[in-house]
Image (cartoon, rainbow, N blue to C red; front, side, top):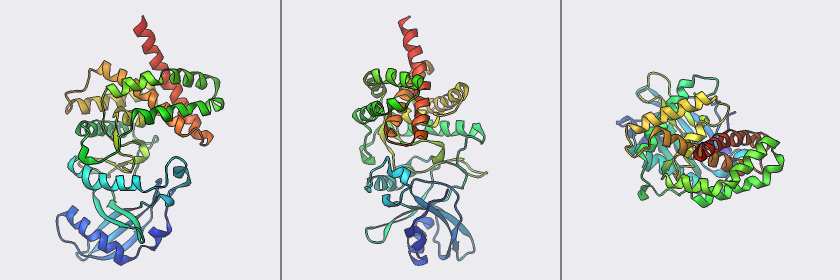
Length: 342
């Protein structure tokens, strides 16, 4: 469903033109003069209030832009349940779009403009990459392409650059989230509960292994809803959005996020392979395919426990979803332990 806000509905033509013209001109490499701004329908969804506009140039050409209200009080109620109400994440997203992504050259939407005013509000204007998000009903090859894009992104951001000024997801953060699963064990089906208990017993050791593998730049919520597929023809069809959770962390957490859910084992493996092949071309530190899979198995369990812990006070649908993921991911981990013992 579309999400909007009083702020987005009330933005006037002069304000939109003032903040859009410089950024759009920079993106196009030419001076532009906007003579009209039209509001467009938008059927997507976002944690924040969002919308679309179309800028009409004096030359007669038009350019669509994506508008995002960064005020956390205007988020969906579901998002408010797992996020604080401060502006830190909004500042982080501005920093990523302005200072981090342009240097990576990975086809992420260009920053067109920014309104940041305690009185007027906080609004981000971005290149509109199109309405199509990754969907499980769509072409699975697009999911593999997204995994490959992620491999290139992680290779580019393997070293945590201090200049990026991004927070770190610490081992303590993930441990705290994972241990919250104790609060929801009574809501789980017996087989899921047993898997969660097995994972919790191993959590400290898994976290040690996860952080020994190193870290770098991550998206933080690399799910299909945050991946836009640009319309053809496009040099880079994958355009990743919603960067308010970007951080420095174990990078495989992104991979096991996009490959989580109702995928077959073969589909999960195909996404891993696409990631591995893309990253290995750029990152000589990547381990062997076998060692890589062992490290990703560890990340998958930690990620599932952390998300189940985050939703421990949430609705049954989220608890069920991440409970299934815990059960699925703990199985390969235990199998690997048994093989190692043998």
